[in-house]
Image (tube, rainbow, N blue to C red; front, side, top):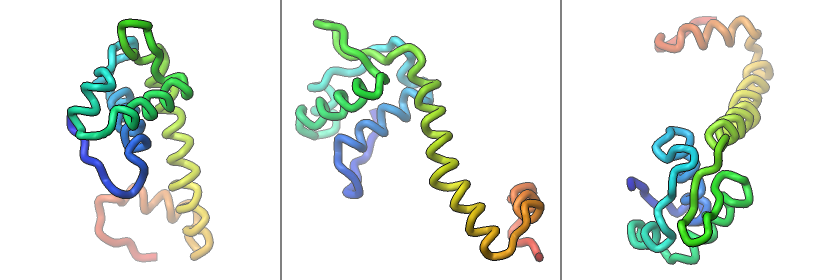
Length: 126
């Protein structure tokens, strides 16, 4: 498992994002088993309670479920659910704000399309 903690957000939230990334990339397949809480805690050097909190968040979002005595497993449909959630978040937090600012400074929709199409260029004149 490759994971690097940062100080920008709570550790449990970083673990949630980490597992979501693994599910979206299909490194953790649907119906696949997640490592145990103790395995994760040992691998990342974090408190098992922190890992458990991350798992509880994933359960609450219907991303993983617990099989008594067997561990945690990825829910069927979790990849699609997370992808849709991330797409919506990307639009709301990036695209929409970018479009608002672009229009505020005078870009037309066609200007924006031209910028996207010429994204391999270093500069465009308007």
